[in-house]
Structures are given as structure tokens and as C-alpha cells.
Length: 231
Ligand SMILES: [Zn+2]
Image (cartoon, rainbow, N blue to C red; front, top):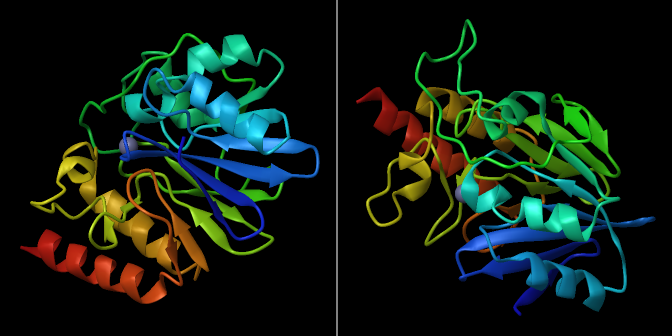
């Protein structure tokens, strides 16, 4: 099991060295952010045990298979843990792929889960020390989470950090999956710009290493995506 600690509160776990989950320390235990693809349950429970703290909450950034794949198994193992996701992506998770007025009229991709959320989030809601930030585009209801204690941003797939920091609005030939899986690239770009404006101290994403002092790299990534989308 590969666990990496970043700062005082964040622990990163990786599945296949490609899909990240995070454990965030709170006074009452841990908040798990994302569950990985299927088969990650034992590793997540082991990671929490190694931190000597119970998982109190399971928080999802968005409703794709590589982030909610182990949710159902974890919910069985941790029936008392809260399950939280945006109200918008909860619809995707339950199989409702309809779009709303004002959204891009394109069917979003989604992963399914049987587990029902215990709480539906809208941007701005707080979950322990984390403030939720709307980051739509990759999915219609993706949320990022800012740890208000130290400025760490857990950005889901709004950014990826393989090779270099880039947004999911930008199609990158050497790591194209986040952009290909992105529902609305123009909205994803606007979200990436808004996340960069938060001036996070640390950037933690679904795919790629955690980046300390990411500001310059995030600004550059937004600039590249702007130029690509203008073409
Ligand atoms: Zn992903």
C-alpha cells in the first residue's frame, strides 16, 4: 500500500499508481474523498487503520467509475459513515442522465452505484474543515474541496498532474483520458480558472501527484486550455 502524507491533514492513497483517493483528518476521524475503481475497499480500510482513525464520511468529487467504483463495498463495510456528493452528480450516480436547461445538451458519462447519499451538497457547503467549490465541466456537478485550515485544494478531475499540471479542458496527447472523459470542456475551463483564483497552497487531484505551490502551473494550464479552445 502506497500512502503519502502531505502537510498536517492530507493522506494520499493510489490505486494502480493512477487513481488517487484521499483521507482528510478531522477532529472526529477521517473524511475519505473518492473511493477509486472497484476493488479498493480493503486498501482504503487498511489506510484508515494505519492512521488510527475511523472513516466518518465518504465524499465524492464526481460520479465517474474510477471515483465511486468502491462506494457500494465501502458502504457495506462502513454503514454508519455519511455518504456525500453534489445533488447534481447524485442524479448521474442513480442513472438519471438527463440535462437541465442552461447546460450543454449532451448526455454526460456516469458511473452507477446502489448506495444512496445521506447528504446532497451544493457549492459552498462545508463538510468538516472542507469547503465545497463548484467545479462543473468534467461532469455537470463536480465539486472541489478546499481545506480551510491550510489551503489544500482537492480538485477531483478539474486538473490532472501527470507530467505537468493541466486542466481537463485541455486535450493532451500523452495523457488524454481526463479531457476525453470531460462532458463540457468550455465549462471545465471556467471551473479551472475559478479554482486557480482560490490561490491554493497545494493541489491534490484524481490523477497524478500532489503538487505543492501550484499557482504558476495552474495559471499556465488555464492559459494553454484557453488557447486550445479558441482554435
Ligand atoms: Zn477520474
